[in-house]
Length: 282
Ligand SMILES: C[S@@+](CC[C@H](N)C(=O)[O-])C[C@H]1O[C@@H](n2cnc3c(N)ncnc32)[C@H](O)[C@@H]1O
Picture 1 (cartoon, rainbow, N blue to C red):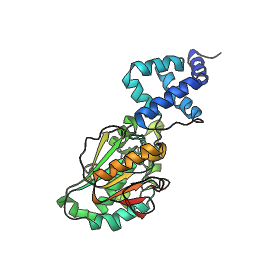
Picture 2: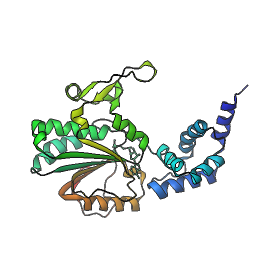
Picture 3: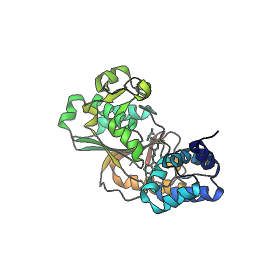
């Protein structure tokens, strides 16, 4: 005999209509620039059905009424439809370039790096490790900051907590883990190992903040580097074009834009000089 809970699950899972999907994808595109093309119905259904269950809302009709009436639920829906895959030292050639080419070329002035679409924090903490490793004690004499932003408050909460399960820290070389990570005190979920906590030496370099890339940007720059990797892949060409132009304007002359390895700028018209795959210079 199904319980009420399982019955409402069955209803919610099956009643995402074509009209619901169109409304959801139009809303997510208008606000966040994210394209949910035809074929993504299953993803939308799976991610939102869980939310409907949490709120004990039986149908997508009723859920969308709530989304239309409550800006907080609208933000929650968009958050749930972001894709947040990331890892430490992801596409590591970028961090080699930063360490070997870009950082050594900078003068003594302020250094500002932006991780735009930072997800759960692996990218900005990787940047912080590379900065510490490259400049060591010199960092104390320099004015260096990493700004890390994302539209999803859910992943930003993980980023700010800075605690990750053992398996994720496997991407961090053992020597760096020893230097910049300590054993977390609280046990992980379901009795898992407590995981690793980012040391204050990393946290002090990074500021996390919510920011929708489609909106106004409060920061003035200039930045020496912007990492916007595996974010533009979800946007259409017009949106990418606009974003890349805004990044150019916010970079210092000689500043670098790093994009994901599958996100070349070659189909866009832009003012950057090509440096190497997925690396561009203003
Ligand atoms: C796949 S993750 C990439 C994380 C990291 N940059 C990397 O390469 O590993 C993409 C991130 O972009 C964020 N995102 C998507 N649309 C956004 C928008 N309009 N404004 C800000 N962040 C956005 C998502 O929330 C997600 O966390």
